[in-house]
Amino acid sequence: MPSFELPHPGQLAATLACVLAAAYLFARVEVEIEGDAGWAANLPTWRIEEHPLLDLFWGGRAMTGYHLWMFSFIGVFFHFPLCFMGQWSWQLEARVAASIMLFWIVEDYLWFVINPAFGWRRFKKEHVTWHKRWACGAPIDYWLFGAISVVLFWYGYGA
Image (cartoon, rainbow, N blue to C red; front, top):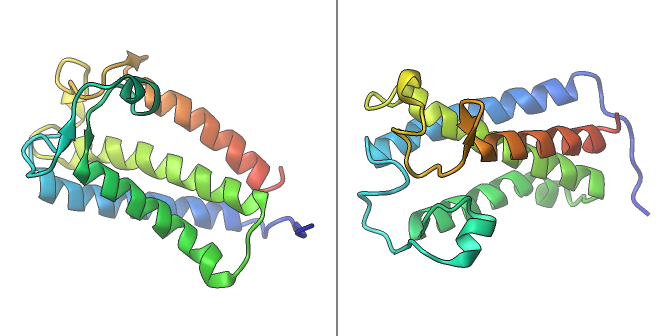
């Protein structure tokens, strides 16, 4: 059975800072790639627009080759430290999963904030058509995965 130690008090803060920095940098990259056409609308990639599983797993958004490879890359990227250290536990996996969820929420929102074609004032359902379901001024995905992320961080850091 893997051992579990409580983290140094600054470890959660350092994790959050790295996740936020990575989200900002990746949002900058995505703005350069996508420009004003969100969800890879103008990229030369395949798209699946309609499928019952897209509603269940993808928030009703299209599945694109761009997003398949990008999401896969980020999953590997966040798991790399575990592979590098040769360590794995449910607590470490919870930290990774929580970090990935937080990363995507922050990265997605920052895409709008830093994108000259949008800005935070246009972060609304009528302008962001690829996010299909909204509540309290944000896509439901943000609320759902934000809550799951908090629970996973709580478990992963032994609170």
